[in-house]
Image: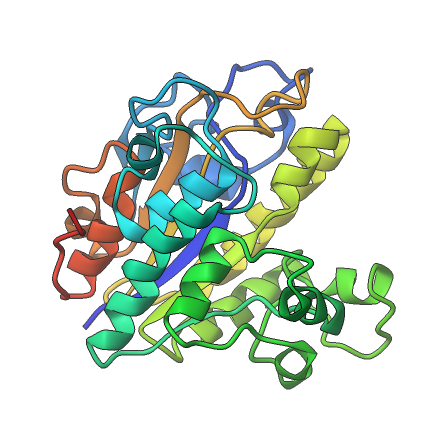
Length: 310
C-alpha cells in the first residue's frame, strides 16, 4: 500500500520568466528544475514526466471568476469538490461556515482514517496558536479544520521537541529566531529533507504545510522569495536522496498563485504546479487538470475509494 506525503506550498503559481518579479525565474533550483524536465517552474512549462516525477500545471480557478483564495482552494485540495463553485465565490483566507461544513463532511484525513489507516498534519504549533484557536479568537485554516474534523490532533511544541513534528520553515530556525525557543531541534536543509521523509514513513498519509511563500508573495521582497525557493530545493534534494519511489509517493501542490509575481502583492489567476514523485505518480495524476483532482488522486494512489463526494 502506497504511503503519501503531501507537501502543501501556500501561494505559488506558474508566472512569467522575469527574474525582476518572479523568484522562480531568479532562484538557483536544480532539484525543482529536474522535476519539470530541466525547466524552471514557469507559465510556459508544460506537463512532463522525467521518469521519476510528473509535473502538472494545475488550474486553481475552477471556472469561478475572481482571484483564487486560500480557504476555498485548500478545501478543494482536501475534498476533491469544487468548493468555489459550491459556495459561489473564491473565499479566504480563513474558511467561512459554508466551507467549514464542506470540509467537516468529507476530507482526505477522514477518508484515510475511516479506512483504518493513519494520517497526520505534521506541522508543530506553539502554545499561543492553540490558545487562540481554543478561545475562538483565531479560526483554523481549511486544512487545520480538516484535521480537527477527523478527530486528529494539531501538534504542539511537545512534538517539536520529540522530533515528530516539523517547523513550517523546514529547518526549525524560526522556532528559535521568531518564537524564542533556544533548544528545539535544528536541521540543515539536507537533514530537514531526510527527517521529513522519515516522518512520512511513519504513517499512511502525511500533510505538511509551508506557508512562508504566501507571506512573501504578499509582502516581498523578491530576495526573500529566492531564499525560500533555494532552501526548499535543498530540502527536497535531501528528501529525494532517501525516498523510496517504489513504496511511497510525494505530492507537491498549492492553492493559488501569489509569490510568482512579487510586483502586485496579491493572489494571481495563474495555474499552480503539482508534482508527483514515485512509482504511483501515474495512478495519482490520471485525469488531473485542476485542484479537484488532488484528493481523488491521493486516494487512488493509496488504494482507497477514489470517488470524491458529489
